[in-house]
Structure formats: C-alpha cells, structure tokens
Length: 173
Figure: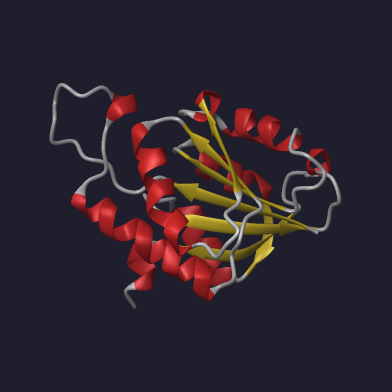
C-alpha cells in the first residue's frame, strides 16, 4: 500500500507589492496555520518517508514550520524547482518516478496543480471529506490518499482512497 500526502503551502503575504510570486513570504495567518496542520498530522499518525517541496519561499517556509512536529527520524527532503506552480500532470509524472522503497510521500506545493491531482487520483472516501475536497483546496490544506498499489508508476485516476482531508479552518471546530 502507498500513501500520498498533498500539502498546499500556508497562506502567503501580499503586503509587498514589489515582491515576485516565487519569493513571497508567509502571512501571519500562514505562520499559525502550518503548525496546526502539523499537530493534526501527529494526531492522525501522518508520517511521510519522503517530502518533495517546491523551492518557492512560501513552500519552504511551510516545510520548516511542520518539520519540528514530525517525530524522529525526519523524512528525507528534496527541494525541487520543477514543483513550483506545477500542473497536476507534471506532479503525477514526478510521483510516478518515486523510488520503490518510499511508501509514504508528501508533496508541498501550489494550486491549481495540487487540487487537480487530488481530484484526479481520489476515487473513494468519506462523503463529507470528498465534498469538501471537491469544493476547494485552500492554503495549508492537506489531503492524504492511500492506494492499493506497490509501485508509484501504477497509480491510476480515481484509484486513491481519501483517508484525510484537513484544513486549518476545519481544525477549529
């Protein structure tokens, strides 16, 4: 069984009108949301073996905020420029190339690619969670999918089971 966690970066700041998109920092709301998602990861025993992270400032900052919450040993981390604003198709191609020893991978990236990938791969799950995922993928949202597959390259559309769909707003309840 394989597990794929898709984490959208936390809320970024638009305070500096001169900052380019790639270099935008996290907003105060994002600085609060990422640790809340990390705490929920601990509570739900979500523990990736490998984290692939876009090289954008906001994704790297999100990663740095969740890492202290993950139990030792830390997962392997790869920062990949190609994940910056990657399409769902590009993300799926990247996942297909994951090593066979990796059983739980996490992607930290951007919309609309992450949301598109989650929608493409999800085939079953709790109806409320499926409806929430279908309606959007806000900042700091986390979708965790499991697959009855042994190799990443064998993932098919609608073959994933949505195990968790977590959002900062949903954790407030």
